[in-house]
Length: 146
Image (cartoon, rainbow, N blue to C red):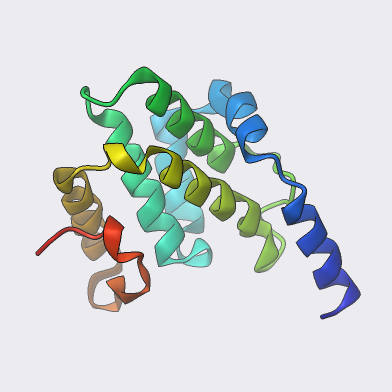
C-alpha cells in the first residue's frame, strides 16, 4: 500500500459517521440529491447509487419514523454537500467517504426498507443504467424479491 493510500485509509477510519449525519441534515434537498446522483452516479458506482435510492425512497414512506428519516436526510445531506472530508473530484477515494456514510445510514435504517421501496429503487436503476445494470454487486437483503 502506498503512503497516499495509507493516508486515505486513516482518514476514512477517522470518519465519525453519526456526527457527519447530524451536521449535514440542514444541507439536504430533493433537487440537490437528484443533481448529485446524475452528476456522480457513474463514478460512484451502481452500489452507491442504488443504496442512495433506497434511502431516498425510504424517507418518502410516511410509515418510517422521524428518527430514521433524520438519519437518512443527514446521510443524503452529506452526499450532496459540496464540501466533503475528501472532495468528490479526487479519483476513486473522493467518493469513498460519501459511500461509507450511505452504507452506514442504510444499515441503521434497514428495518424500514420495505419491498415497494426496493422495487422502486431497482426500477430506477434499470431505467438509468439499462442493460449495463448488474444487481449482482448488491447485498441480497436490499434487492427486491422477484
